[in-house]
Length: 139
Image (cartoon, rainbow, N blue to C red):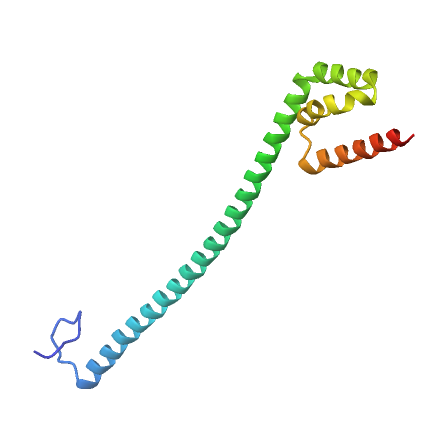
């Protein structure tokens, strides 16, 4: 059946031109809707990229903060270790000074452990003591 004008009290058949105009109008509306959907999809893609970039930055910052917390926890442990054993260390230092240089080899491992010397620091001190002992032996 031929299309008719809507809302009219009598049905009037539409001409081929009117049908083409209506079809073109409907296609135009679909095209506009498609453009809006594509634009929205591009906006969503851009937002997803922004969120991914922010997530990556947040993860990097989180890793840095975890490293900082770990370093602070280690420093706190060392501080507590030193504080708890301060009297012990004081007695070691007193013995070190009162015993003289002959007490250094005996007390160095205790001091190195207590102060958590690195291997390099320990080696440097032992080398310096060896040089000192060698120079005293020559005199």
